[in-house]
Image 1 (cartoon, rainbow, N blue to C red):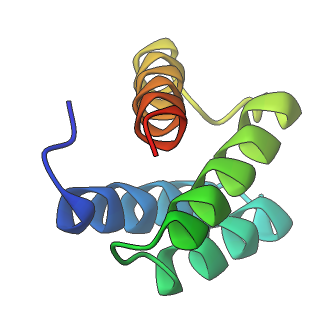
Image 2 (tube, rainbow, N blue to C red):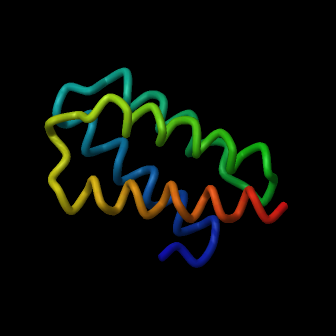
Length: 85
């Protein structure tokens, strides 16, 4: 579970590196752009959610089952945070 935006930023950076290392450059760029906008604002959380939904929909084969589960968990957390605002 992510405790704050700093952890979200770290997760997004890690995911972007993983995607880039496995030739998913377009997906990595989406995640990197969202990472640059992470702050306390609702808009930046929305940007992260959009980028992660794109990754989830693409189902990149480079992600392990555990990484897919983590992606789903982060998306749920973002959904909950944004729905509460």
